[in-house]
Image (cartoon, rainbow, N blue to C red; front, side, top):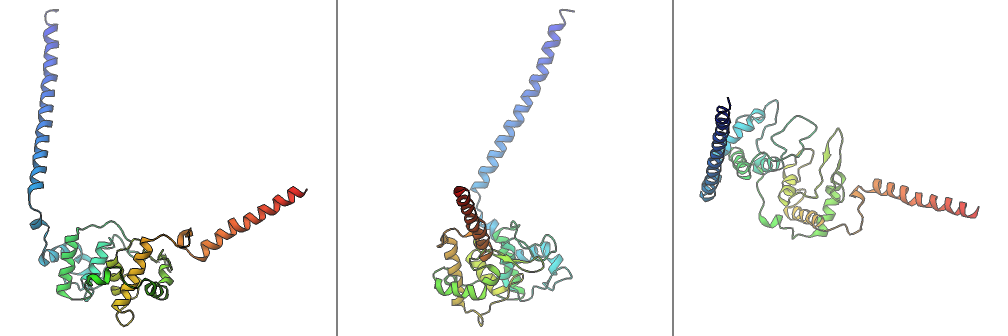
Length: 266
């Protein structure tokens, strides 16, 4: 009995050792393979793989958008026709994550973007080739070098009733809202004015010239890049938040002071 015990223990140790060696071998093989794959991917040119054509855009549209908008932009019961919307509207809706739409609602919310920039540009180029519409502006319109003061006045007259005078956004009716513009890119500001997404009206060149649009964009970029000149902005919500602040802290302080004086005199 005693002579068999060492052999049995030795056998158990050899089985565990074999399993450990197999595991180490698999891990080493996997590590080498992963490292080699990463090295090959880093050395391969990416220009050919990321350059998408208009035909690629058509395929992407038909695979991801046609269910609602139709195979040829004609629209369906679940989505409007895209005739004449142009590449600018498509880029705006997809680059802000509003499209593809997750579910029907008062308006499409912003959410994480589901496509790459190349894919979005390919889809928008195909839409433009089928039914042309508003297109991308020149670089000068988006440079932020327009008349900031004039732009601020134009924004106050044409946009502030929905977006707030400080571009902080605001609530509309029936669960709709005007989004804040405090982090919106210059391109998407222009696209919103030209294409009129959601509840926003279209500001064509008869309403706002290209130079006036440039001024508005410049004023909004100025707001993004500079702190409130008036100090604490209280959420930029206007008279409501300001009145609440005055009521709580201003009148509250006066009441507290009155109580203190009365108690002191007694």
